[in-house]
Length: 270
Image (cartoon, rainbow, N blue to C red):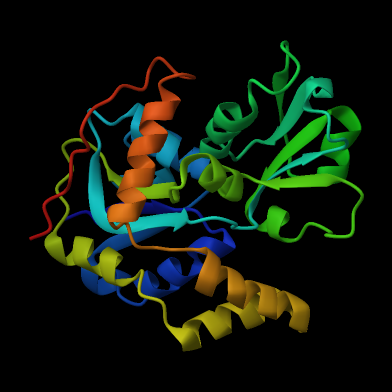
């Protein structure tokens, strides 16, 4: 039997899941393939992956056909420090173009929901590589995600808006950045479903190893990494996260007519 193909991005926030899961891939007949969140969503839709951690926005666009793996996500509640809108001034009406990290999709939707009506009436998006200085040299503002966002120079003269925190201020709910979606027609053995769920358990020793490697002898980066993975990021798709995902679904209707209100289809893992 061919191995099941599981896609997962390799940002810092996915490292605990990846490292835990890689311990048992051979026994599970599972192959892990990495890529950017957007690439994984495209490959899942094209049938090149069987299941994948994809942007929640991409899941909602395919809610009628994808099954959702219970208990697993990447989420935050309040400040997360890895999804920023960065502007050169505080007057949003002066913002005519926003350079967006080309790996980002959920964040673009959140940007539209939270800030779209506050920018210039003719504002537009410009896909860009995640280099803040280059982005802001060509656009009024920049949307930057993942590790480059974590590594932003906090002493820079720009204005930063944490989108997870802005979402919480607006809705009072958790924000779900990514979920594990299963393509229609794919049978996932329960031992694989259970292993992915179990891989989300936070292990202090593993987090230290991950953060030491990330920090490269920089103690400030090490502390930031530990705080980020321990306190900012949640991997459990519980009731609060489901409420947040449902709220996101409702609000996305206003920016994307392809997203409809429909109950989530859950994978049976019993």
